[in-house]
Image 1 (spheres, rainbow, N blue to C red):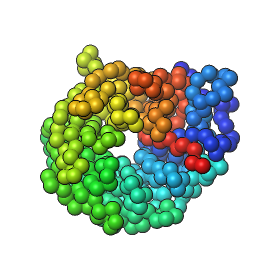
Image 2 (tube, one colour):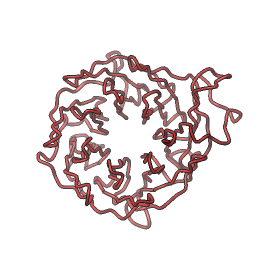
Image 3 (cartoon, rainbow, N blue to C red):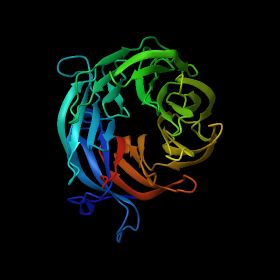
Image 4 (cartoon, rainbow, N blue to C red):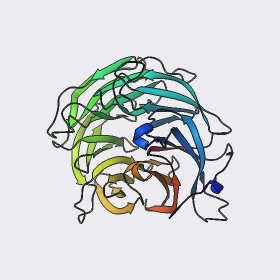
Length: 385
């Protein structure tokens, strides 16, 4: 595999092309190499040189401080980013930034920033109506809800829920660490993976007011020391899947959408039997068909494919795909399910893969795109119409 050179770069991108945005760590965490959010053109045709898919670098989309996780509003062409800080405007909190996306070039323009209401925001999700952002603050151990105006600008938080407690890991679980927030397909319940508590906390979500209230039961627990990180629902809403960072496992839950209740089905390893080195689980994603599940391993440096049983929701290990880099922190799945992009944080690379429509297997492009300390990769499809 080889890196793209400056001669491969495109100066402009057509309105009907797919873009990929990469959130990064900046400052010392990137050894001074990153300045914010970078973007790429997903080139899948007219490939006279490479005869393969490529990520053509388009440069810096916008300067930002530690924009480590990104969320998109496709219809309004908006991008939201956490700013993974411990201090913002003189207060012990991180921030969230809202950007508009230029329809001709894909460049980002900052609309505004708001406090995330807790230190170290690391994950966010836009509700189904596009009216609120739910933000998980890892350092603060809490969850905040920020309104999104018609123009994409963020308002001050309308609700904050603080977690409390601890679990068994002597270093990573001394207190609460909200690591990911997920809404169910009906937009009625919010679930927060708290790595520090070994719980997936459940909240009823009032979409009209942006308010959260504890569900009953208030949480689903995973095995002590697991460290739940991120959660995804199968598209039909019948099952949910949680990647556990500290034990490199996935826990499968059956979901009752009326009551908002998670019931554990099974927990499986993300690692092949032969591997016994250090590893932490990172990202989890479900194929839009619901037939396949992907997870990333940091240490084993792989993305693993599971097949999903249609009736039971259970997982069968299919194969592993090496990422060609170090610490694959995140991967993004194209909404059309044709491609997947892996962010190798410690090797400063992105790797694009084709997704086989018939079996879900990944076919790496063989070409790395350079990105400084990439943490997150998201696809922006062309505008509709």
